[in-house]
Image (cartoon, rainbow, N blue to C red; front, side):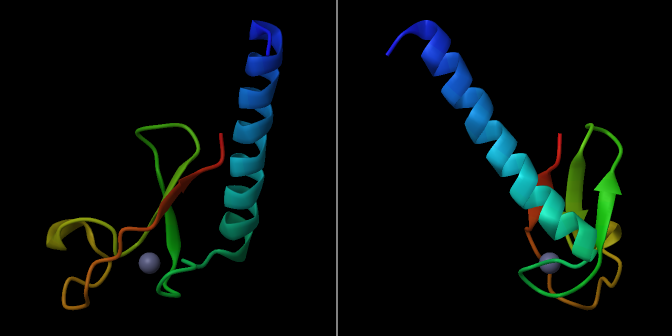
Length: 73
Ligand SMILES: [Zn+2]
């Protein structure tokens, strides 16, 4: 495979990953636990479950955490 082909294949894979993530984000719901998704503004296109991370970051600290995240860009 040439370098150009490798680059194109990589871009194609990223496009697919982003398309899958976009389809999840438009639902507004985490596919793992069903809670809402929120955007993390520290990186472009970064979305996380609202229950992501340690207690102070979760929408509801009394509920278990969820590690779902995805990138749309
Ligand atoms: Zn979740």
